[in-house]
Structures are given as structure tokens and as C-alpha cells.
Length: 550
Image (cartoon, rainbow, N blue to C red):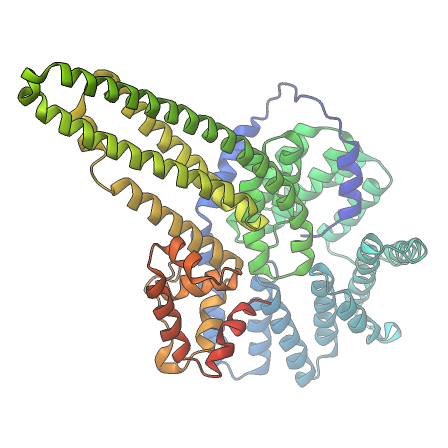
């Protein structure tokens, strides 16, 4: 999808911060459609992967250079919005095949496409080198000439936006305008011509004129297609220029919806929508969308899109950190209340003991009750200790890296809800003097085990998100017979968890043992056993582990 970041930023700043008026468009319904599409994204990706596999299989058995060219071109079309590195590989292979066949026009066309792909992915130096290697005077194909001008215009516009030197920025923008003026719309395809006219009206501030050309483009594309997503994104820009925030949100959501259904990993529209929702105060939905856009950007693999998403993720992380602090204060209040209840219980116990001395004749009858009360007191003390430990863990979570805050916040909220349920149930049982039910409720460790498994699951998911190649890089440091194979790639075993903590800077065996609920000697033995399988010097093994992902 083409990118006009400077125009978008200026227009969003000018957008009025007012409540949405009632409209025929139900934005919540459109958002729900987008949410449902995101939940089914694996199916859309599988469809694209199947097409890619079909073309790759055909390419392996095709010997004809022209047939190989056609298949590489189809693979490029599949990878262009899906995986940047692979797209560049196949369009570069198209260039080699076209040159091998002596087809100068097609080789030239692919070189221009490669330059445009490099520009879209932020590889401006590479794009400039490619374009400077093309002799403008020797471009014989009319469409290639227009593509040459449009690619140069797009490249200089991008350079102008990211340039921090005012003099060079003005020069880049001037070059972009100069090459745009050289484009002959009569030679371009109908959609390209309408798109250029739409953007000319847009640049001139004529929103109505831009929408007229957008209406023409909309009639030419199939709803839900990738082309529809592009047209919808331009309509979003037009409605921002017009000041219609409801229509703007509708069309940027339609663009994002089509991108998701077509397994597009260059999620420009979704990033824009997350920005708007963040400005509206809808932090949860903004986080959900920007997190999905971040995952897509990682798959598409361009620094440019990651740099655009990072500030939004930081802003959302700050909001979640503030929410976490409020939750911690609430939890502290609950701990104080629980302590008061425990003190009250101790007072009642003391009174009960004094009464027991006065009622010696009833000692045998009350013996069983006293034992149960003593056991209950011990269990409540243990529960209070668990609450204190949970509070310490939650306070320590404030110092975790920013990347962990967003992933662990809902786990803290889960603990608060569970602790509140425990407090209410214990309080109700104590007031009702239902000691048997209270004993059964506090007898086992099921609650502890569930919380521990949830913690490990979240730790594994977060760590593998931050270091997706950790397992492979870790195994590369080990001898073949010592390498670790996981049954479930998303779940780490104990060996990997220990060294994952070391990678995060937690080297003390006692701290690792406390986190994993093992003894210090067990952790030491795990570390020693793994280091014995190192390919190189075992004394530098942990230093090498700490360098993974850098």
C-alpha cells in the first residue's frame, strides 16, 4: 500500500477532537468485523502459503526461462505485501531471467519494481543506486518511463519526509514534485491515471474532486480485494482532508479489513487506525490492533514500518503501566484488609482459648473444634503469606522491561480477581462459621499450580516474542548430541527457561531457583549439565548466551 506519512500526520493533527455525531455508519460493527478477521488470520495466511507453495513447486520443475520468469513474477506478486525479503529475491531473479532472455524491456520493468519495493521498505540507498543505474535516455518502453518517474517521485518524497536537514528536505520534495510533473497519465493504466488525478486534487486541498476520482476507482475493484484496500486507504485520506472523521474511520477500517483477509503483512491501514483509536482513548482496542500490526511488520521485515509502530506501542505501554500502578494500590489495600481480618481472627481465637479454660467441663466436647480452628489458623496464615509474596512479585514487575509490561498486565489483573474471590469466600465462610467448607477450600495447591503454569506460559510467550530465534541460536552453541528439541515450539523446557532468565540478566542461581520453584542445587546442576554440552569453552558459554539476539 502506498505511503504518504507527512500528509497523514499533518491532517491528523488538524482533525477536531469532538464527539462523533450519530451516523448511518455503525463503526462498532465494522470494528467487530475486523476483530473477527484478525481471529481468522491463520486461515488467510494458509491460503497465501498454499499459492506460494504451488508456484514454488512449479518453478522447481520448469526449465523454460520464460516459464521461470512468469512463475518468479507470480511469486513476487505474492510476496510483495507479505514478506519483503522474499519479494526482493524473486523480483531480482526476474531481472536475471529477463537479461538472460535478452528482454531489455522486462528487465528494465523489474528493476523499477525492485527500486519501488526498496523504497516502500525504507531501503532508500539501495533504491537510489538502482535508479541511478538506469539510463533515462535509453528507456524505450513508455510505461517503463512513467514507472521510472513515479518511482523517483515516490523515493524523493519519502527522503524528504524522513530527512532532518531543512535544506536537503526542501530539495528532496522539489525533486519529488519535478518527477511527478513528468508523469503522462495518458500512458498509465486507467487506475494509475485516476490515482494520480486523485492525489493531485488531494495535494491541492480539493477533497470533493479527490473523492470523485476515488468513486471511479472504487467501481473498478472487487470489494475485499487487495486493490480495494488500496482504494479504501486513499478514500480515508480524502475524508480526513474533508474533516469527516466517521467516514475516515470507516474507510481506514475497510482497508485494514481487506488487508487482513488477503494476508497483507504491510499493515499501514491498521497502524493508522490504532493511532486514531489511541487518540480517542480506546487503549485496549488500540493495543490489540497495534500488537497485531507489530506481528505482521515483523513477518514483513522492514525497519521502516517497525519504526512507525514503536512510538504507538510505547504510548500504549505507558498507559498500561499507569493502570498497573493503580492495580497495585488496590491490591495493597486488599492486603491491609486481609491483615485486619487475620488480626480479628487472632483476637477471636484468644477469646476462645480464655473461655475454654473457664469451661473445662466442656473441654472434651470442644476438643475437635479447637483442632480445626488451629488448622484453619495455620492455613489462613499461609494464605496471607502467599498474598504477601504475590504483592512483592507484582511490585517487582514494575521494573521489568517495557516490552514485558503489556504482556503481563492481564496476569496481574487475573491475580487480583482471584485474590478478591478468595477473600470474599474466606470472609463469608468465617462469618458463617462454616469451618468444614473453609478447610476443604484451602486444603490443596490447585490454585498455586494454576497460577504457576499461567506465569510460565506468559513468560515463554513473551520471551519467544522478544527472541523468536533463541532456541535455534541456543542449540547452535551446543554439540549435536546435546541440542534441545521441544515438543511444542511455544513452550520452553526447564533448561531453556534457566538460560532465558540468564539472557535477560538474571544470573544468580538462587533468583532463578525462586522463579522456577526449584532448589539452588538443582539449578546449579542444570546449568552445569548444559554447559558440559557446549561446542566451545564452557566458561564463556553463558556470556555467549547473553549475546543471543544482539
